[in-house]
Length: 360
View 1: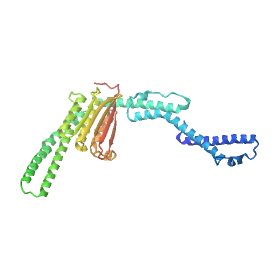
View 2 (view 1 turned 90 degrees about the vertical axis):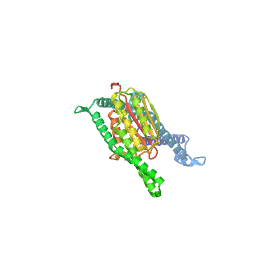
View 3 (view 1 turned 60 degrees about the vertical axis):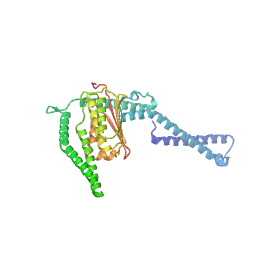
View 4 (view 1 turned 180 degrees about the horizontal axis):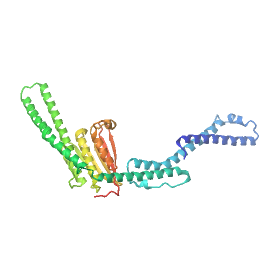
């Protein structure tokens, strides 16, 4: 194959060769008709007031440029299937039929044929890794007779109870007292400045209550408890609607997937909804879960405040996204986050559904 750096050289050689051929043809013709000083004719003979030498140069450059375009077009045509396969690999779409297509072997594209074989091997290894991750994730990790998930669940329940019985109740009592103070301030001659301060304190307590509700939702998550994934997600969304004024739109497909993937996916959705409730300040939220080309595709889109993804990744306290990424990676999936300040956030999770993994 001709590399990008050598296209220009081939075009330059073509230009030079064309110019020499034209000069040779002209010399032969002038020599045949008896012209002795043939080279002077290149400058003395004019067509439309332009010396003949300039026409020869123009034709040579045009031929060289045509050769360059032909080579570039041919290479683009050959590389397009390879580029498409690399894009599918990068997006985690391992079950696409395009990846199973073989490039025909010929002498002109032997390197591309070898590259295509390498892509097939990479695809097989990625599928094998995803399969092993999903099988490994399906095996319970037992510590002192309890699984890791059970230990975490019990600790979360304990923290949720303590927060609800202490901090949450105190915030509720403080809010009731502030409401009474605000009502009394309206009836008496309290200065405007003090009324504003009381209102500000009420807003702070109200915001703290919302944050506490979000924390309790996060620490005390709903479990599937025999329900399908579709039913569990819809229950979460309906519960979210009762806790925050938000327009919800969803399209959840009823999928039959392995228990291990279903569990992790449900936890990921809980985490995403908790983040939306606590941080996004969104007025609209969309949730889509579908099976496309043997890939489980989850998309969560909001119109909230957004964030700088690169900066958020570097923060030591950004455990939410870190936890989501670990769960998705644990089942061989990929996570794609698109977010801009004050323009909302779009999160796309793709998990390959490997056929070898037992489905419930």
